[in-house]
Length: 140
Image (tube, rainbow, N blue to C red; front, side, top):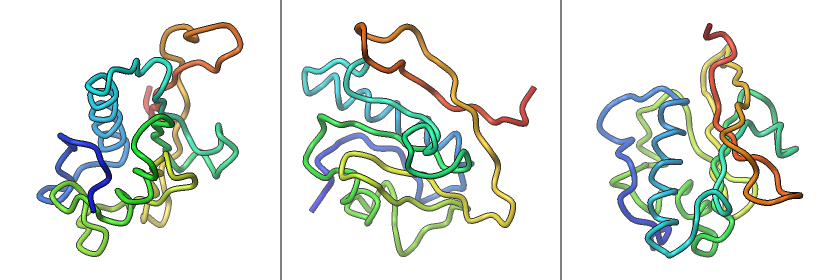
């Protein structure tokens, strides 16, 4: 069973650093969101897990709340093996989820990088959280 999303990035044939991979997945999720007739400014986001109360600033979370049911669970478990292979993962990060509508990028490095949240634009409406992206805390 697939995760219900199409045109997902290839994380199976070459190593990709965690931040780049998270951004690649976020871009793919945004495209899927638009193809489903929704606006990513409302329906998708990316931030460190501590921003959502689900972990630390060493974990990056990509979410699509209005996406296919449990897409994050299915994807993180390898439902789209041409994009991500749970048991054949070549990366120095792996995927897990907290809710069924998110994917969390988790480093396997002994000393993982820390990431910061960067606001992207204004909130889509009053009372909603901002859209974020993540950047390396150590980068200048």
